[in-house]
Structures are given as C-alpha cells and as structure tokens.
Amino acid sequence: MDGTIFLFLLQDGVINGAVYALVAIALVLVFGVTRVILVPQGEFVAFTALTVAALENGNAPPTAWLLLALGGLAAISELVRHFRDLTVRRLVRIALFDLALPVALLLLTRALAPMKLGQVANILLAITLITPMGPMIYRIAFAPIAHSSVLVLLMASFGVHFSLMGLGLVFFGPEGTGTAPLSSQSFALGDLVVTGQSVAVVAVTGLLLVLFAIFFGRTLLGKALRACSSNRIGARLVGIPTGAAGQIAFALAALLGAVSGVLVGPLMTVAYDSGFLIGLKAFVAAILGGLVSYPLTVLAALGVGFAEALFSFWASNFKEVLVFTLIIPVLAWRSVYAPHAEEAE
Amino acid sequence: MTAPLLDVRGLSVAYGRAEVVHDVSIAVTQGALVTVIGANGAGKTTLLNAIMGLLKARGRIEFRGADVSSVALESRVKAGLCLVPERRELFADMPVEDNLLLGGFRRTRAERSQTIEQIYARLPRLKERREQLAGTLSGGERQMLAMGRALMARPTLLMLDEPSLGLAPRIVRDVFHILTDLRQTGVSILLVEQNARAALEVADYAYVMELGAITKQGSPTDIAQDPRLVESYLGLGGNEY
View (cartoon, chains in turn green, yellow):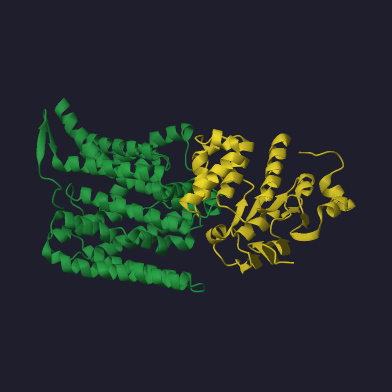
C-alpha cells in the first residue's frame, strides 16, 4: 500500500465514519434519555434514502402513508393508555400531531412529487416525513413501558426494528436504489481526488455536531435532556417531564437518521433493510464511547469507518467480521479502565 | 383556622402486595416547620415520595386547596411542591450552576436568574464552586446543592428527607440553621428525620411514624417528653450524630 492508496482509504474512512458518527450520537442520546438501545435507528437512514430516491423519480414516496399508519397507531396507543384521564388538551394534541400532520404531509407530497422540485426540496421533504416518526414510535412502543428494565426495552426495540423492516418491505418493496450525489464536482488535492460528495458529508456532519454541542451545552432544554440521562429521579424531581424528554430524544434521533440517510443515499445502494448494518456499526462506535460520551463516540465512529476502509482493501470478504471483531479488545480494555453507563435504580 | 397548605388524608402506599404506609394523615400549615420522626424502615421516605408523586398511592393529597393525588409530578413541582430526596439525586456529571438552573426548569428565565442570586447569597459555598462538577463535591456541599436546587423551583412547601444523613455534626448544624432561616422567608417545611433530637428542636409540630403508621402527634415538647419515645428515638446519651 502506497501513500496515495492510504489517502484514498482515509477519505473513504472519514466519509463512512462521519455517517456512523451521526447515527451513533443518536444512539447515545436516546439511550441516555430513555435507556432504550434504538435498534431501529438504521431504518430511519434507509427509509430517508428511499424517500429521496422516489422523489427524484417524480413518484410520491410511500413514506407519507407509512407516517400516517404510524400516526394512527400512536393515536390509538395514546387513547388506550390515557383512557381514564383524557383531557381536551391531549385530544387536540393527538388530533394535530398524529392525524392532521401526517394527512397534511401526505397531501403535500402527493402534490409536490410530480413537480420534481429539485434536490433541496426533495431532501427537506424527506427529512420532514421521517422526523415525526421518532416520537410516534416512542409513544407506540416505549412510553407504555418507560419504567421497565433495559433488557425489556431492548426486546421492545428489536420488536420495533422487525416491524419496521416488515413495513419497509410492504411500503418500499424489495428493490434497492441510490440517489443523486449532493455535488458532482471533484477536485484534486495532490494525488488525491476529493469528491464534492465527501466534502458535503464531512461539512454537514461537522455542522450538525457543532449544533448539537451548542444545544446540549448552552440551552436549558438541552441540559434538561442531559439531566434525564444523568439522573432520572433528579430530573423528575425538578419537574422535567421525562416522557416529553423521551419524545424529543426520539425526534432528534429520527432527524439525525434522516440526515444520515440523505448523506449515504448517493454512496451506496439502499434497500428497505440496509439500515440495520449501518446501525450496527454505529452501535459499535456508541459502545466504544461507553454509551455516555459524545466526543468519544464521534472519535470511535471515525475509527470504525477507517477500519472498515482498511479492511475492505486488505480482506474485503471479511470486512464486516473484522470490524465487529474490533469491539472485543476495546471492550476488554474499557471494562477495566473506563467509566461506563450504569443502570440506575 | 385556615385550611392547611398540605393536607394528606388516609394515604396508603404499597409495593406490589406489601403495604408499607397505612392510612396516614398529616397536615402542614402555611409557614410551619413540621417534622415526621421515626426509625429506619418506618415508611417515612415512602410517605414523602408518595406525596411528591414518585410513587402511586391511595388516599387524598390536598395541596393549596386542590386535590393533587392524580396530578403528574411535574405539575406538582410547578404548583410549588418540592422534595430534597435522601440520596440527593444530583446531576453528578454537570456543574453546580447547571444543577441549580435545572432546579428552576419550571420557572421563567427571569425568575431563575433572580432566584439563583438569592441562593448564592444564602449559600456562598455554592457560588465558589459554581463551575465544579456536582459529583466532585463533599457530602455537606452536595446537601447544600440539593437544597439549593430545590429552592430554585421557588417551592411553597419544601420536603426534606434525612438532610443530616451521613454529615459531620458541624455540617448538620449548618443544615438545620439553613432550615430555620428558610422558614423565616415564608417557606413551609416538611422534614423527615432519624435525628429526632435535632428535628424536634426546630419543628413547630411533630408526627411519630412507626411501622408505616402515625402513632403519635403533637407539639415537639410533648413528643420529647414521652418516656417511650425518649427511649426509642432520643437515646439516653448525647446526640449520636
């Protein structure tokens, strides 16, 4: 391997790693606030890429119907759970958020899709369709069992993952597709050809990470979310509604997943089930970050991306195995030296 | 007499099938410092947690004239009910100042910045340590921070669970000094303590809790003279804390 190949692999690794980083910090965030290990995080990624692809072809994406289906389920779940203490406020919220919003987005996508409004509009529409799915899924699957053990939540999380995969197959079909690159330009940097796509990936990821750092470090809402993961009882005692915090965490996770989907769409062929592997690699990074530390997680995600690039050069048949094998020595080392998330209560 | 600020009637709490608090009725009048004393395991912490809304309970909890027994915890905080729990439950990986600011989560930005200055004035130690992570504080400082965080919510009724637990005698004195000081500002206090002697010294009214039920109530002087209670809770020697 000479220097040029190394630089190419490094570029590849950074691009992969940047996407894993976005997915991984979503996992850390959701775990911190709700103790849920969000197995279906990858589905947000895949569904977004498929939505953008449908819009590029001028088709109304089935995502809008999926959103309506989830909205309906969330409304039913909410009504059943709060049957005894239904208030007008809650009813209005259910009607607006779970029913009116999906219907409005459905009509909007059906009107806009044939017009082929261009890349920016497609991306914004896809993100708008995916993000509300986060809180809906939280209210369907996790809010009713919010106080259960991590293991129960994990099983529910796998249940959601398999359900979404099934729904994905129904709504999107088995075909894989790719999306147009965010930028088709490229420029030479010495021997290295840098594509506009890779610059876009790194720039968007960097920007999002900075915005997140500001949100969690400076705003009261961000601090309240951190407080939920720092001490759940303490957070409840100061009056932070932990259910709402969970929904916000899920919305942010879906948003991060959607942005990752926009970024990976042009890089690979995405099918309804492609998300799981992305989620799993991001999970490796999240574990390396101890499921608590955001900077460590981002660093680990870049490491996972780079390792993947190296392994696909050296032993492409074994690249997945090798990436997942990496976790063992690191876990052994961390279990001795590093702090880790402990289950409270 | 006006209606009490907090009026708990017939409160029972069970963990699964085991009932640990049976039919407890207590009241706190506006501006009073009321204490519930009793041995370890008498159900005092459970009682406070149920009043706060951390635990489900049967019975009626009236706060400021409204029934709050089916009201969510965060709305009870907003209404002015606040608990400093036995284990403090601080945000250990966040700075002292963030812990305090989050205490005022239910208040407006203006109220938060005003209250935090008052708390810094009252507890200057916290101001010195404002940048420090809560998890690195000493036991006494943690208790101060837990109280400060609760005060940030501008409570009408402050409930404290064993504020003296695990603290050196000098710091216990500080804590109780702060409590009496607070009462001067109009905050009503419900204090749960194992350190019965110290609690009875500062309280206006006292309840004795044994095996999940209130067995005696009255003025602190009456309670302190009850021979059986003296033997069980007050000890024969000096202050063991």
